Length: 157
Image (tube, rainbow, N blue to C red; front, side):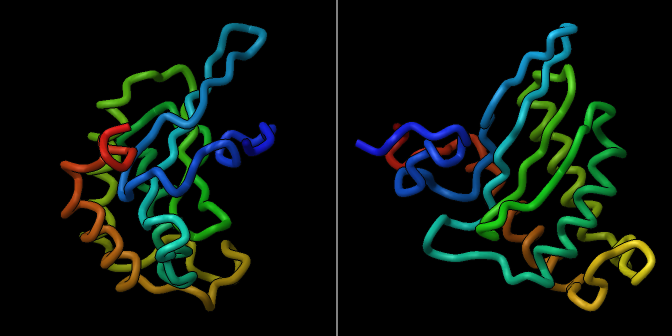
């Protein structure tokens, strides 16, 4: 038995998930009634493959900027250190299907992009590490499997 950890994703059995998927990873209730829903947007299969950093970095910029055009409740969109996905945190919005629709629209925005937003030394901490083409390839891969986004675990566990 693995020791229970404070971080939700450390308690997830990464050998039992099947990427790509979108999973509700946590719900946090604030003392004033606000609720944050955190989603695990898994792009690559854990411990089998990962996103290359320039593509991941550009996809992060594109998703973070464009998702806000489709969702008014975004707190944050950030990459996972393991380079297999992203976390999306939203405030007072518990509509899972709405998250999927917004993600699809945002990925289509990525495909239509002519440049990576904030891809310069003033607005980005590592502006030399970007790949619009790589981000668009990741977006195409995700969109091609959108029918699988709700299938999180191997063998439907």
